[in-house]
Amino acid sequence: MSPDPASHNVTASRHPGAVTGAGDGVRLAELVAALSLATDLGLGQPQQHIIRQTLIAMRVGELEGLSDDERSAIFYVSLLAWVGCVADAHEMGKWFDDDMAVRADSYLVDLTGLPMMRFMIGHVASGSSPIRRFTMIGRFLAGGSKEVAQSMASHCEASGDLSLRLGLGPEVRDPLQQAFERWDGKGSPARLAGYQIARIMRIVHVANDVEALHRIGGVDAAVEMLRSRRGTEFDPELVDRFCAHAGELLAFTDELDGWDTLIGGHHALERELSGEELDQALEAFADYADVKSPFTLGHSRGVALLAAAAAASVGLPGGDVVLVRRAALVHDVGAIGVPAGILDKAGRLTEAERERIHTHPYLTARTFSKPPALAAIGRLAAMHHERMDGSGYPSGITAESLPMTARVIAAADVYHALLEPRPHRAAWARDAAAQVLAAEVTDGRLDGDAARAVLDAAGHRVRRQPGHAGGLTAREIEVAPPRCSRCGTD
Image (cartoon, rainbow, N blue to C red; front, side, top):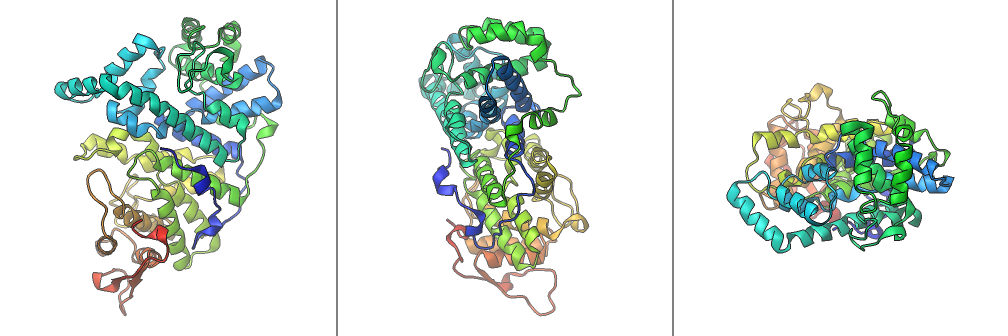
């Protein structure tokens, strides 16, 4: 279920402890392109798959004679077409264990009729024992395939809602509802056919699969795939024109920086975001990341609220408070690159699964690596699992390399996560969560001042003992009613 765009379309300045800063020259096009790097993870594709897909779509748009406005729309439709993959990740993970592997393999198949059913059955519970696989396949045949079809509608809804929250209009949202439609009318969710499908989305359909096949097997593989699906999955006239110009349209080299080529290629993409617009967009990204698992809904917003209030409480300057809030909003975007079957696993994680989870802060930093203003957010966000004693991840850095901004986010993340249920445990009570935070400080993993500020922001009364500099003991903590509903157990 995707977040309600109306319920969250608010400015940061309405939250206690949050400060709205400048947009720092970030363009909407750059922000959406950054989000596409996270979507690549969810699709099981290499970095810049969607950026390269969009370059292909833009080139096809030129070939088709699209206007500047239409080419601007195709830019955003292409970059956002698959962001809904997080909205159906839990459902996909329920059947296929590794939702990302299924999406990656799907590029090689014309997903209709018997080929689609064989593909789906081949991936059901693919990493499980033969007995569990047999059981899950039976359940899938009894009703799971319908659930997967329904999840496609959730995907489209999530993509469209996100486009509205980013301030994009119906020229982007409407085509996004057609991400899984097919030329032959056998797609989902509305079973549109032929010219009922928006021209922009017909182009994106072609560009998406072409990029994957071209990367795997070159121009010949891409052309062969298009011709095999001509008139079924794809617009036949569009296929013919593409194949006639395939070499020109796919004139990529390994050295090409798709980001710079894409972002600098169209004057309509130059609009810079205000500070308020950037904050709203990052809030949308937070909700987008959290919907990957039903156990994390609202987590990133809650951490951001606590962390910003705590940052102000410890005396960080206003610019740092803004940076803390923005980094906390997107700290878990990298979790999009972790299979839902791992995130939602109730049992003990294997070492390989644990290592996969430990990559998510790095993936967050990689997503927000350009431009410089976003890179600063990404670097800070990537530190939320680092610890003062070097026991954290992904880099194992110690206190000397951890700024107070990172220490505050780490403490806020630990506390807020404890208040939320997880697949392997129920939510902790507020007082118990506070005691855990105190123990983490005593054991040298979290910063005492940061933890005190987080607990104070959450509504606990924290008394500093005279002469007690570093630790935080249980006796220093008293539980009081939370100062705002978003900071408590709800």
